[in-house]
Image (cartoon, rainbow, N blue to C red):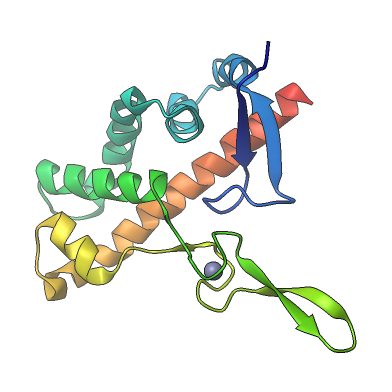
Length: 174
Ligand SMILES: [Zn+2]
C-alpha cells in the first residue's frame, strides 16, 4: 500500500528542494504527539496535515502571547492573529520562481546557475499587500500601520514554531 507522504520544510513557508524531509502521515502524528508545546504540534498538523481543527489551539496560544502587547480589545487581537495564521498557512507563492525562491540563469562562462529570485528576494512567497491586510483587519490602510509590526511578529512566531516543530519531527524519525 502506498503511504501518504508529507514534505516538511524547516525554513520559509514553502517546502523547498534541499530543505525538505519527507515523512509519512503516521510518522508525523507519532512525533507530534511527543511534542511538549501543544501549539507547535498543532501548527504542524494544520500546515502539513491540513487539519483546520488545530486552529483553535494555535489562536488561543497566540492570544495569550500578544494580547498584553498593546491596549486593544480581545476581538481585535483575535482577528489579527487569526488573519496572520491564515496568511501563514495559505501563502501566496511567487509566480516568478514558482515558490522556489530562485531561478535558473545561463551565464556564459558557467552555464546554468541558480540565482536568487529578485521578485520575492528568495523567499518563494509574496506577503499580502498592506491594503489587503488592512481590509482583512477591517481598518483603513493608514490605521493598519499601527498593527503592522505586531502582525509581523505573529508571522515570525509561527515561522519559529514551524522551525522547532520540524526539527523535532526530523530528529525522531531519523
Ligand atoms: Zn520568487
